[in-house]
Image (cartoon, rainbow, N blue to C red; front, side, top):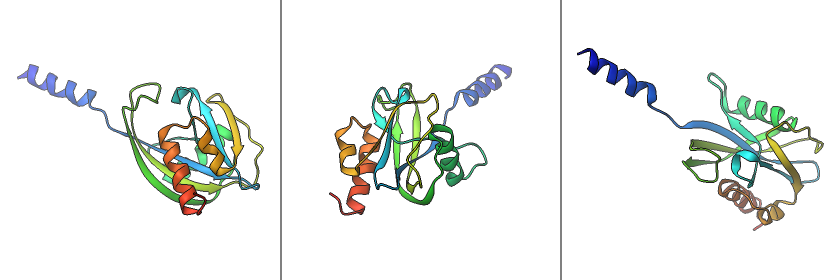
Length: 151
């Protein structure tokens, strides 16, 4: 019987769940959008964001991640869309993400990056698609362009 309990406990300890993440396509005063390249997405470009901490609201997580990664304060935060990344090869290690994407604004374009950001650019929204974006950011940018009648 003890062996059965041990096996059951081991199974519970190794069970994994998807990670809840937030990210945003942010527009600055010039109406350009911010895209970034991080090492975590194997050289592709995306938007700043990250994991939601236990007990943290989605919006609070988004605000915190932008402060940590690029030093920007966000305003006019609006939910955009939900995506899912299941063991996607674009990410540097096996992971399952529930991606909650937002649109937001910043009152400035001067940024201060942390170690996660390898490169960054403020670009016209349609120009973002010319960058090697990860597929999830491609979907977000296309959604933005469609909603703003820019496609």
